[in-house]
Image (cartoon, rainbow, N blue to C red; front, side):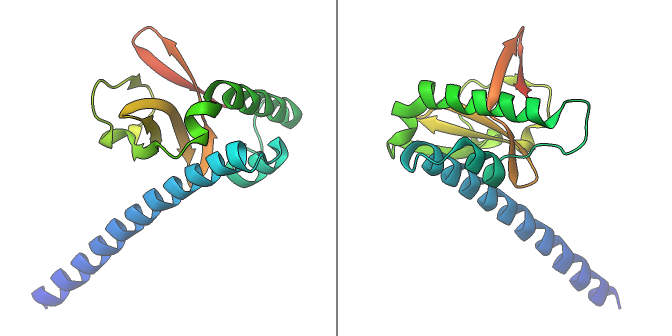
Length: 149
């Protein structure tokens, strides 16, 4: 009986570890697809929002204002990062895997992924489940904050 319990417990533990790895792989694929759609395929803002972004359905901000904010953020990203992200020399890592000096965040870091180029962070992503919640970041004092819509 003792061995049966141990076997069942280790089975469920291994399932949760595999599930975490799958979530990480899904997030990496989401970022790769987001970058490809935005910079190589020149997909529309609406396509990007519908396929890769998480916009909360109900809150205090009007959905049209949210979409306008995200559209402007996408335009800004395209202007400022097109040279870096249109070439294949970038890498996607979790925040915890990032080497070197790190920013401090108020959010839990397990939901943050980083795009690096030549070992330096270029772009940060905040996730909600498997969708990108934000890629716009501001620095205030010693902390970095994601702008979310």
